[in-house]
Image (cartoon, helix red, strand yellow):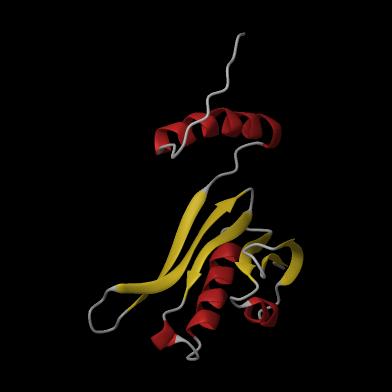
Length: 141
């Protein structure tokens, strides 16, 4: 097979999918079907019903990855974040997950995750500058 490498600025979803297809096929051949499933817990404004935050995650290989967690400023300090974490753990248990993992920045809320039983398993320094990207996990019983 002859191959060439092409550099492309601002690739589209079609380019991403073309790269992802053989990677997914290889992963499935090695580790089986990851049984992907997306979940969302939406925080809505009680008056307008507009989504103003929430939690978005995906399950792969019996681990739930929290990709997004956003608590609007007006809902902070009222237990909304803790309620979302409790609910996502319930979902993960219902789905038979081994655990939950996530990443966050050092200027966000690492102490919040530690308070909820998550332990740090990695960090990336100077990302972004003068900060760190932190990786947390929690194994479920």
